[in-house]
Length: 634
Image 1 (cartoon, rainbow, N blue to C red):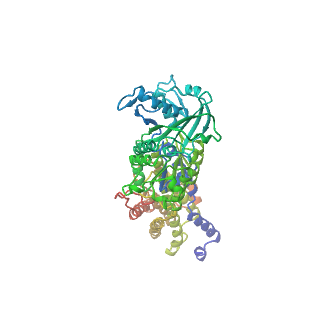
Image 2 (cartoon, rainbow, N blue to C red):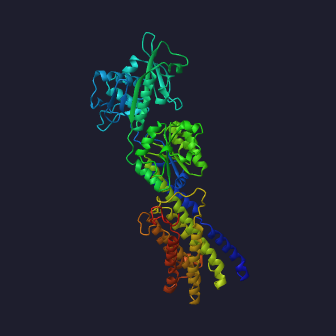
Image 3 (cartoon, rainbow, N blue to C red):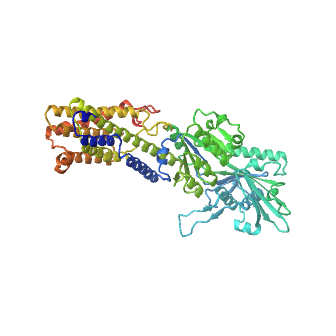
């Protein structure tokens, strides 16, 4: 409208209006976002985290709750039987891994025949009530180890039976063939197998959680013996062991239903399995708390075991109340826990209760990440904002339900992925502030320039050329910027926060004002000196934006993203080409500038640079540790 009032041709004004409309939107935004997400996914893959859904890269940056299981995630997942208790004796077992080498000790000395007899009977029952297979190492490979097909807990029981001198599993199966079974499930918490014992006799072997076995409906033992066993199981669990109770009995036939065989049995004893915590588990939770992420442990183990492991890996924060630290799945199902988000450790949980915990956090507005490896973890992995599956030992169902797959099964990899997610989000926000500030500056120049005596400051082609060089080359290069120094020392962003919230609009307007003032100032000086003011204003506006992009960097002299300074250099060369290459200058309607004109236009680059640095300083936040390393463009 201003141009028409000043008598400029309508066609020129129409093209200029289109140019301004283009300037208002960062055209390269889709390319920048896609490239930033793809680069983030590539960096995560290098750190053993495979992204299955690209938008998850950005979502990771706002994770505020990390729910994890225990076995294989907080611990190494190498179960070893370390202690066996029977009503007659108690023994310790040495050795590590699934190697059958090791000793059975009583008070530190090798156990004799009398002490071994009840232990062998118990471990023979666990070897029969077992679906795992131990595979010996390849003799041709000197570095090979024993491997497992099946559940690690059951494999550890087979190894312990071999250490105690029991027959090999294949020999046991030949002499006591299985004729019936009741598989383990998370509700019953026990497994029962029936074996032919000859002469119309059936051997029943049962193993399971102490609270599911040490009950009068299953065992016929005296109440005082059951009380002793319960006390022993609680003591072992408090030391961090996974505890199984084992029972057996004989009967004349296979009942119908088979579950009827789970009664009238005699207690054989308890098995305590150890699983050492991962070396970096405690450091991982410390990093979570520093980053404002709440860790939550959800396990199927005994509450005392869960509490002991949580303490070892420093899951509890200093302010946690001891009496509120562990809640069982039964309490969750019964509705006895009014606020699931106040609990940090859940024990004896089933898949539905895991889902309830995730739903409770989501209802509170948290962004949740859930780790899992089994079929039963599928619903919770799918419901969480970020499902994380274990790649090495996880099931295909878990991997398909997950957004992120950890190839090394390390929980610390999730924290590294969160860091990459925050980096990606920061880079997208940085580009939006930069790109929209540049577009706003171009619009302001076109609107304010005529009021200052600069008719039609920029041609439509010049606007498009500026956008190509600033939003295109440098904008895409911004997607590869490294993470800010304090990126993991700040809380996660609220999920409801607008991408231009948290002061981004203010930064954008301040930068747009600075770039506009620099460009118009250069144009006015050139106009007063009777120079080619329109070409100088074109160079000034482009130079100021190139200076701004360098000033917005978190690390000015970093070598981790050489593409950005190269993009700035290439953009500067193309800007010079627009002025000095006849073919381009004719298309863009520019003029070759002398030293004075070039100096006036190029002088706007440091103005844009220092304006960006001042804006960063003005909006910098102090992180919780007291330093000011967090990016001002979060």
